[in-house]
Length: 113
Image 1: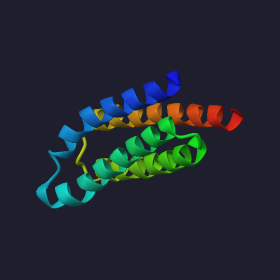
Image 2: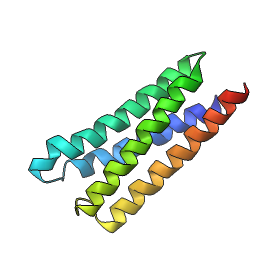
Image 3: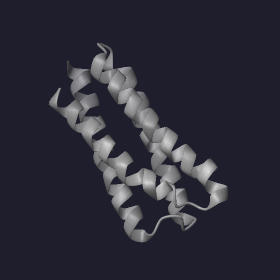
Image 4: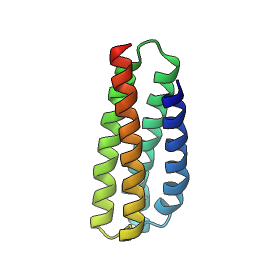
């Protein structure tokens, strides 16, 4: 359970950091790319919460992992379009990678349980 608490905390921290950055996107992308990034991350959080309370954790965690990978690609696209500075992109990428490693570890533990 400790791993799941940490994942949820790290996701919360990522959202707190990222949401204000998404608000700075150009107007025409605020409701397209920024919204999609935010929605995907909120979906990752939802899947992790569902896994936390479910006996069948694996399915929820696999979906969270896939959604996080989709988010990673959207964030990279936003960076390539110059909506994130190199520094902010580095911070966001590291936070996403950390969450991904944690979900992977949780998934591995769920598979052996």
